Image (cartoon, rainbow, N blue to C red; front, top):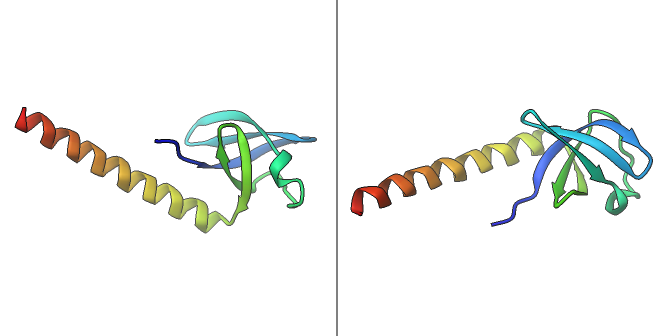
Length: 85
C-alpha cells in the first residue's frame, strides 16, 4: 500500500525543499504546490517525493495518529496469523 506522509519543511530552495518526518529527511519537489505559499516550518503531505498540498499542523498530527493506529492494527493481525499457523 502506498501512503502520502506528512512532512515538515526544513529548507526551501526554489522548486524543491528539504523536509523531515520522524527523524527522516528527504528532498521533495514543490511543483504541484506552486500556487500555495510555503515557508520553513510548514507541513505538506508528500507522496513519492512530491508535495501534494500544505497541511495545518493539527491535520499533520491527526494523519500521523491514523497511520500509527493502522500500523498497530497491522501488528495485531500479524500476531494473530502467527498463532493460527
